[in-house]
Image 1 (cartoon, helix red, strand yellow):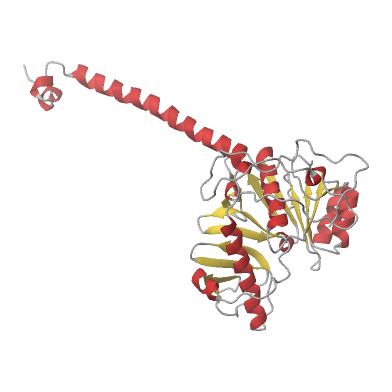
Image 2 (image 1 turned 90 degrees about the vertical axis):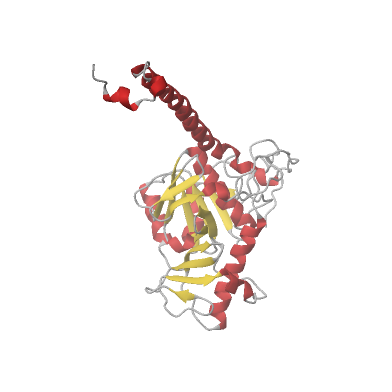
Amino acid sequence: MTATPLAMDLPPMLEPFGDLALTVAVLLTVAVLAFTIPVWVASRRVVKVEAAAWADDVRGDPSATWAADRALRVLLASCEREHVVFPGLARVVVGPERIDVDLVTPTVAPPAPWSTSRDGRRWSAPVELVQLEALPPRRPEGLATVVALGSSPEGRVLVGLDALHGVLGVDGDRSARLAVARRIADQLATSPWSRSTAVLRVGVRDDEVAAGALLSLDDALDVVVTGASSGVLFLSEVPSASAWTALRSALERAENDWGVVLLARHDQVRWQLTARRDGTLVGDAVGELRWVDVALNGHDAVAVPAGLPRSAAEVAPTSPPVPSLPVAPGTAPAGRRRDAGRGGAARPGDAVPTR
């Protein structure tokens, strides 16, 4: 009898078993894959779901704010030194080796140490040269609404909300949307260049974003339309058609220094971003950012316009720190931030401090 090709290819000790050995090997391989693949997928899913849950318990690295502050101060000081009119800041990426600045208006003649792209829409400078520049004695104006939205492979990404001259929309998972809003409000209170920036909220509760003043839509619109100061307004939902028209018209004025963050989707916003529970923020305007990398610094108060009350959470006593917190990449654990929704709320009739 002529031997089959299978029998000829097998080692002599396996020839009696032939197809049986091959079948057992295939079954073992399938069994291993059937076990490992679901375990891997499940582990990935757990990490993604938990990101929104633990992110607020991680405190930020002060060096990230320091690096951004130095870059912004050097940027505007170099323009002032060489008598260059700064064309407005739309976005800044502070990376480990280079700083990129996207401009509102193209300008092809930047001051040293900055270089420009061919179309003049982006200025860049090596970090080592920025560090060598002398800092001005005072911080420049015009940065009141600059906040970090997240990190990209190139570095920490900051945007000027007022430079959008329109609404920033953030949709997606509700807990992730509120986490992004808390990070914006926290930076407005703690960043050296924006501590006097007013924060208003419409429909966003104290236990969701514990900052600024909670107002009616009409009162908030009056403040933004007047545009007498710089600030950021948070909206929990799309307002009526008339209010939306008035808001957009006010923001489109060149002299208006307000930014508006809508925690919903709308087809007439300037940028529409989607917040995810896995700690990412995605949109055509920014690509994919990691909002979870913008850890909270904690704050005692956020500026509000004169005559408006603060949120109840801002006059509450601070809770003691809680140890053993989870650590996100690039951050260090610290005390738990104050839970705005637990006790300490101001009672009716109590005096409310104002700044």
